[in-house]
Image 1 (tube, helix red, strand yellow):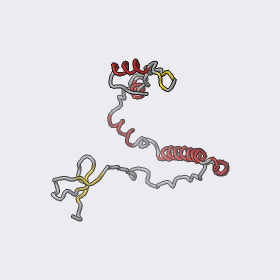
Image 2: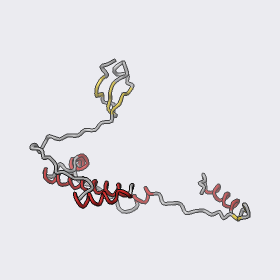
Image 3: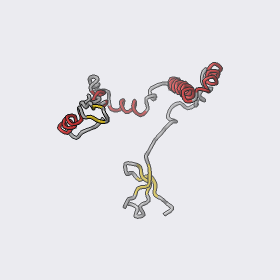
Image 4: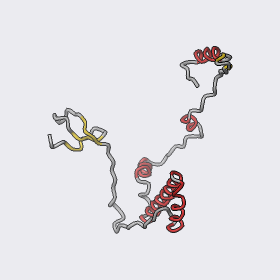
Length: 165
């Protein structure tokens, strides 16, 4: 398999190689059908769906999709996710090490899963107690502090100055 810069180079190579004799064999050269670009295929699968919901609702769904659910519904969804992951772990263990298949099966028969899953410890406070924020942080050389050792978020917002300097 070869890739060429342009169609002319490809055609010249095919003309030279097709029928060429090498070690008592005749080479066959031809233009192969290019594989479909997966990105283009995905885009062309159907019409683009436009989300006309208000920005606040779209952000809410993207950032914290369980926020509109009751506390019990949130716990049930999370428990279902954990069960699904533990089932997959059992499958992956047997796939990676066939000799553990019997152990995994006996554990599944005994516990229902490869590992016991405990119920959640419910919080007495169900609103306004949880938060999770993720930042990409690191030391960046800046001229703001003079010493160049500010701890900054990815967007350049100063998080903390290095007090050791």
